[in-house]
Length: 197
Image (cartoon, rainbow, N blue to C red; front, side, top):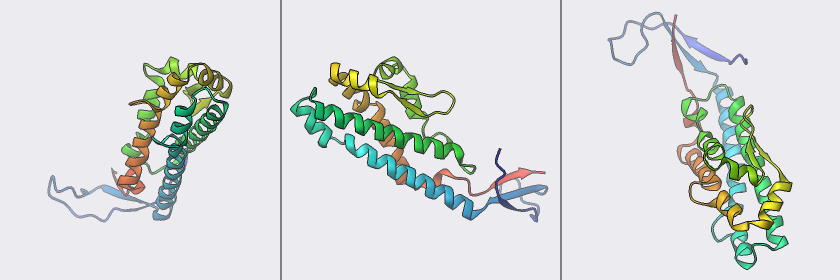
């Protein structure tokens, strides 16, 4: 368990009930601004990397074009494999960063739950059949290139649907990235918290 740098104040006066102010005998802890800013910057970097990896799956992008030409073509399969590997790496970087942060609030802690629910939900066996699973201990994605390559060659439409279909992996990851970008990463971190002593 990490010890987090904080400053605190205990010099509060009596506050009216329900005023939202700390009461006597309480301490308000203010996380180190430098430490919080470092975590915010880390989340911004992870979200940017995830966003870049997701661009490979954009509608009308290169993968869509190659799929329309020939979904069983080796060039398409190679590009899809590379794009999926990059996406898994970016997701894992984001997951590991979130798990290492000490100042995440409850919203920040829940950022990847939707993604994990997709991988563990009703389609879990289908994701496993294409080589994508979720490590229960770490929350990271595991990626079997061999299984993915075989599935993409045999059933390109099914693989495409699992990755980019409605409410599947890519749209849910896009939602996470858009949430971080729209709310700004600082939204997901505690600025202060009260404890009663």
